[in-house]
Image (cartoon, rainbow, N blue to C red; front, side, top):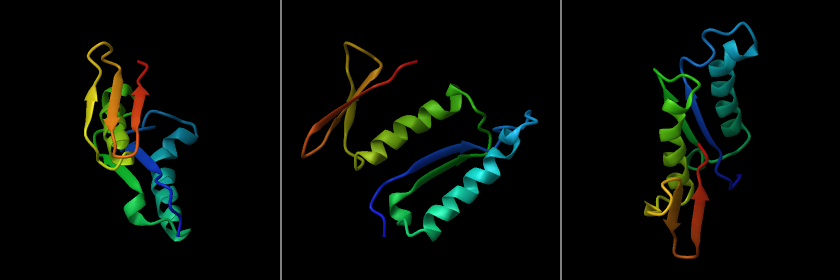
Length: 103
């Protein structure tokens, strides 16, 4: 069993206007998720978020990014640094983790 925590977000509408490999992005991402499980990754260590209305832009994935950081840090409390609205600070029993989000 693998003890890492891959996170994946995909919007169901990603690639709908593409003629490239991106047109198959959703199917390939779902397949990759299944392959993680087949390779022995614990489902409890996989975060797979699917948004039926999601497209490939910050409007959709920025929300999931924050959720993924929260999940990766054991769902510990976090707050936004008042001096910089682009900095999240997670409080964990072992250490303080800070992530800067660049727009």
